[in-house]
Amino acid sequence: MENNILNLVKTPPSSPAGHIYLVGAGPGDPELITLKAMRLLQQADAIVYDRLANPQLLDHAQENCDLIYVGKKRDQHSLPQEQISELLVALARCGKNVVRLKGGDCFVFGRGGEEVDYLNQQGIKCTVIPGITAATGCAAATQIPLTHRDHAHAVSFITGHRQNGKIDINWDLALCKDSTVVFYMGLCNLQDITTELIKRGCPADKPFAVVAQGTSNQQQVVVGDLSNIAKKVERAALASPALLILGDVVKANGYAQSLANQTALKLATTLPEVV
Image (cartoon, rainbow, N blue to C red; front, side, top):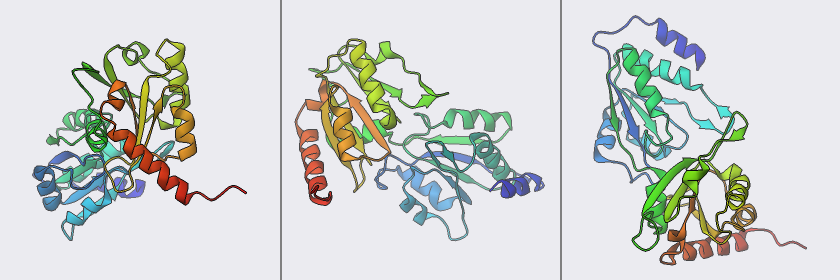
């Protein structure tokens, strides 16, 4: 990939330059994408896509479209962020109209802002097409209302991953009363997050849900409270991507619990018996 980028950078600039479209692919279900985003996918000369963008969306690309994977997993980046930005500029300077396809919404923990800044600095035109972010997608799929007149008057989105080896969370924000807290990228740190919240005074019986592979056919749901959710998730062996939802809204209508019961039943029938 690095050699290909170098070759693109050496290619003489085209006149006029192409256009970059930062497109939100939605949270998992390929049908949860806007009509505008779909049209751009069908017209693109190149699609630069992430791991969390449903690969079925690539089926809508033109036959001669360049499909370039730049996905990231925890501690595994197929291409550093700086080189992704350079790749977008190089493609545009070759005269290509490019869709930068990101899971969820580009501007919600998607590093879209960094890419827009770099493109502007390089004089490359760009347009941002919003997508359904994981929080609203998973909330709809589990019928957990992020706000509710009886339970939550506000909602906060917080990143739960480690930076430079430690969790850097605004705990005051996470502890706001009468609110819902949604943690992105926090599955691997779930035990540390719940322990710290309890230590800082959050009630141990505060409802907590974890939604893995949200909105997709592989969706799994685990429901518990702050004191036991980490153990429940460990037993269920949930895999990322997963979203963490903390708040009374988790128990607002019982639907999320029914999905969690279905997940537990499926696990019980697929896990080997312990002799």
